[in-house]
Length: 135
Image 1: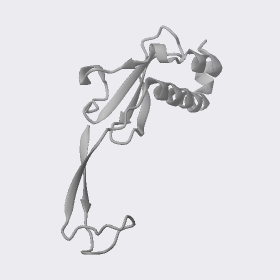
Image 2: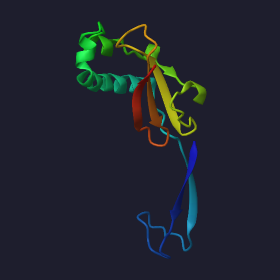
Image 3: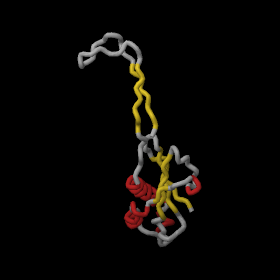
Image 4: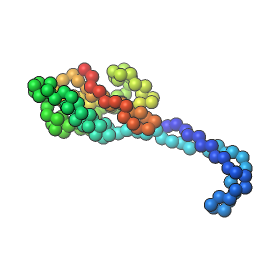
């Protein structure tokens, strides 16, 4: 959690909608703001979308290798197999886990392979940074 500080500056004596007058001096108001948390469900959606793009690029390799079809690969992406990466040692890309959330999912293109899909998100706004596979 981080704290946002809002600076409230009023014009002395100006009426507010409530009929009160605003402050003559500046007032600082602190408000706790939760960082955006990204769920495993969100990673599932993003990984399925990434797989669609990935299959377009690697279509010839996939077709000749006995890999899963796109539809089967997407269906195999489930929240039950999503892992929250607990430490930077487990994250091969070295994201700062105080500012990022990283999820992992076993490979669904070639099930049983050593490939793992990782998704990194910014904690500040929940935006997707990248999804990549790693072997």
